[in-house]
Image (cartoon, rainbow, N blue to C red; front, side):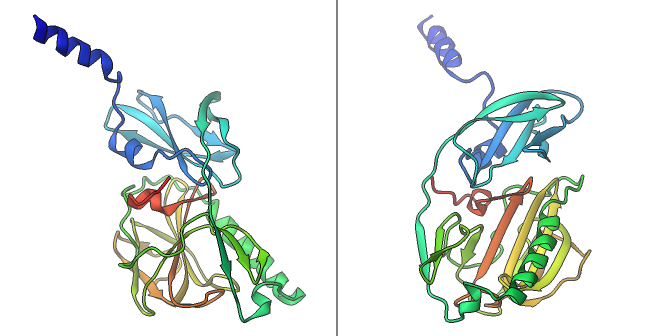
Length: 273
């Protein structure tokens, strides 16, 4: 009898529905993080939007649908809302502190570009923004990503950056320390949607993993893929370099979800609150 009572007590103490693997991996609802929202069971995938952008929706554990929402660094902690099939559903965003990083550059044009370079930068920014906003129907092949290079993490996501003492945009990706020429591999399968050689990013590749989940790899020394190419998980897309605004060879990796740049460390199990 006492054993039966103990079992009943433990069952009552457990949540009605335990979180699945993807929720445990990705749910870091802070600015620059990810909110995983339980949408309940159903035959068809709900249509979800956040800040007027379509949102990644998957079936977790074959039991319920979940929305995986990218939260930009600019989001305010507190109550936020998504639109689910025309109705609103609330969720909470916590706070997170980001440190500062001060960088000295020898080329003053990479801090305060002249008018000609500013026009180039504006054109390149528009091109990259269009890539980030693509939303394909394909399901991502995996959400626990592989590391794109075998190297230690260097500059983390979200740093407030000062170039030659002047504040600029926060660090929108994750840097890996790696030697020039190190192969860069796709952390998940996807299609190459943009390649270019940009003022700030240098040689760059964008890969669409599906449903608004986009990777960007920059400062490459070489690009080994073509526009429209389908990449398998682990497929080589380029080599580590120091092109663009870089002080030395490294890989800068961005992850974007519903057009929000988020901390890639979440997807490789390396997130630190």
